Image (cartoon, one colour):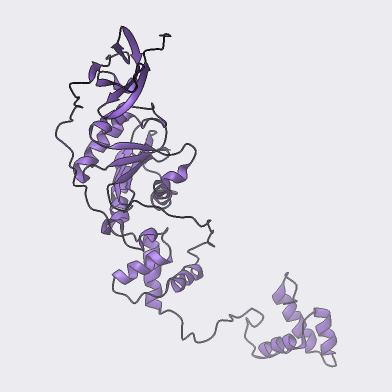
Length: 376
């Protein structure tokens, strides 16, 4: 519309006042105010109504909207959104359907959220291929989310464990540090409740160790005794653990964003509430908007009451690694092994006929030695 941006209502009043003068050239006046004749007659007609607010813009919304969503259904959409501000249209649609309501299309729900100022324009991410293991407990993804401060000036390090197949959150624990002993304690509690996975997918570094071997840690050795393998993601490729990374973003958006917590008790209570919601109530897009609990079953492998030690054949050359220095004695020399195996029993097995041996912990080779190596 060609009215100037400044004092539009005053310009309309002025135009009408001048247009009402006797003998005025209406079309010439329109050119001076840079409006069309149609616009001029519209404002003259509104001024004739003698309403005090006639110069103001009126809503262009139609008097009736037969296809508009019912007010009570729109209120239900906004109610779910208010309870879960990070949820999108399709999650809200699934929740309304679970409540027995005739949920509108996801596009309609999105339009309601836009109309009420609840969502920003979407940011499209590149298409990617999603991979998942075919059954629960084959692989669990484990990581620490980035630490954040509590109001009591301590740092919280959230430990997260996610089942790769179902996206079920098995552990969401507010830890005071990222040490191996802390992780082992949380894993023991998780194993007692859900059983043992076949493997863990972790990143590289403390306390998991690193790939390629020999990046062993005490935690990795303990898992090996339980029959749980440790798989390391490719360095500098967080997308390898994409499900856990996505879980962390959701946790930040729905729990941690714009909130602060006084103590570990406060943040753990918030974690516990949200973990239940995430597993049992929150529709998951990657699961066809089912909840993770619908696809998860506890592992049939229970946490043993006693950790078993590796057994070796009578033909094996068995040695115990030193308790303070990581060496084994063989053929009059000391041979290094990873520090994490201090105090453990290992077996030396010939790999070739020319003096090349492998050092094994159970069935896993952890080091090697070569009797032809004269540098010791």
